[in-house]
Length: 389
Image (cartoon, rainbow, N blue to C red; front, side, top):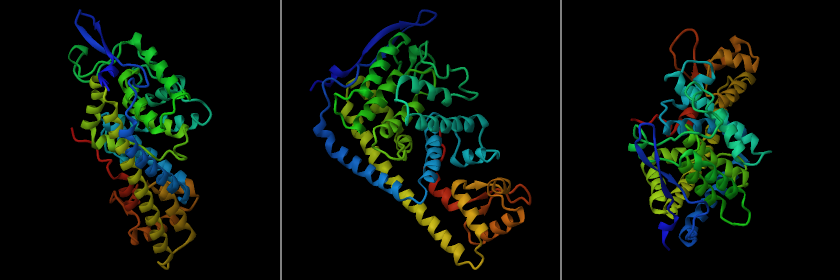
């Protein structure tokens, strides 16, 4: 097989001032020559098994919506970190509790917009096809913040962008010029809905992700949207009943390899190496998500038992413990607003939870205290430490 036939072409362009540069236009999907499926089947089988276990776990969770709520936030933090934000999961939860995060507000607002975009997309794909129109709608939500307002939110770009470097002439990679975007995107949309080609869904998602990243159709937000696209495809195609699989932790941990594979597809046509990397990520991520879900279920059970055996258990304490499962960083005002319990009852209940080492007060202040469900947040936050530059 001559993989070089899969490599796209370079078109010569120029910018104001006359500097010329080469922009890359990818070949259309699916790859031609076709994929060497024999090399991919062993990993594909493992990936499908791992996803099956994760999907099965989501069916036996006491409250799958709770896990979905927290996993979406974890993914938002991780995917945004790949793009350079310094927001942690704790920062996002503090922001959502109307408390001050420990990073610049623009960072955490950007992550919050990712949560909004993801939730919007997950609801829309239940009734509307995964299409260019929907991708633009999701992008508008993603970029609805101070940094994104001047980046044509919800619109495909009409000017040249580039990756790395200070201008197209010294960039690491230059995507297609604007006039070539719709050909590639139209083909991508058709590829997603082409029922005449029976590619495994995971491989379809792997191909679509790279093609979207290579076209880079927006002025900003392409990486985050390209990663969201993976989850949307798996949900639309029924591979996942609940959208609990997100690859950003794997891609963050292996970001040099990730960028290397993207470039190798463009330069060498090596789709197979990228797909093996992608499937390995699916296996690892699904296994980690399953283990985390099991650990969280065990923690909740252990803590409920500790409350029951404390001799101080009340309905109010269990109500607050349930609220902390949805909001692991919280203040008394938010508990009062949601549960309708009185402030004295809340304070007594939190004191019991503190004595059982289930929650921890983190401000050390007499007023405006913030309580953290420490062990739960630690399980959720694993891997979400901001990237060092």
